[in-house]
Amino acid sequence: MAKSKKVTKKRIVVIEPVGQAHVNATFNNIIITLTNNNGQTISWSSAGKMGFKGSKKNTPYAAGQAASDCAKVAFDLGLRKV
Image (cartoon, rainbow, N blue to C red; front, side):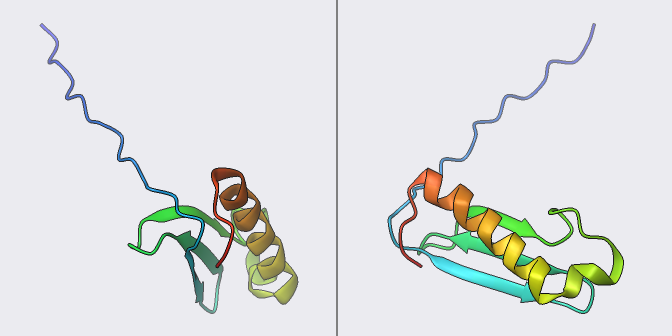
């Protein structure tokens, strides 16, 4: 017989109107994460996720594109102020 799979519950993130932005800028990529005040991730994006390759990932334009994508998703979920 096949083993039964474990059923795990999806963690529910409380989305408050006010949150925090965390920016991780390395030599190779830029990662932007928006969290609630408890530190739970609401939305994230990176330059690589936006389709930039190689050295183009670490440019101000790529960072702006990643930030706007991350902010759009968070706004749709209810985050209003960072």
